[in-house]
Length: 150
Image (cartoon, rainbow, N blue to C red; front, side, top):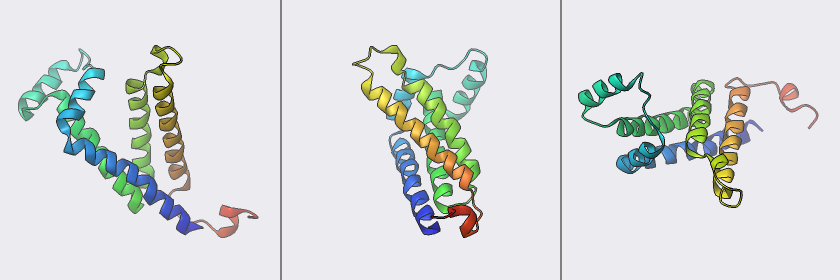
């Protein structure tokens, strides 16, 4: 049974590795999409301007790189089972924030919000799988405690 857990963890991590890589390979398209949904709060706007000046990139471009890198690194760490709990927690926060920001199905009428609602529910199930990774952790468990009378 632990082989299935390892295999499932690797297959699950492929989702984040792939989506993170596509964000990094299309930074401008990702940045344009982020710019339509994310507004920099006034309280941190001066700091964002300083970072933009220092890096010669816009805030959405920097966010696209950060999000893509987070997905690739966290996906690899979960697949390799190295710091899986920590990276699963980071991904829970990221997926929850992304769901609220990008899938605002509550602002659309019921027939038009079906795709966004399904995507939001998909993200909810991904959060559930990440919770299972946190709960299972890295340690091996005795067969009786882990599997009961299966």
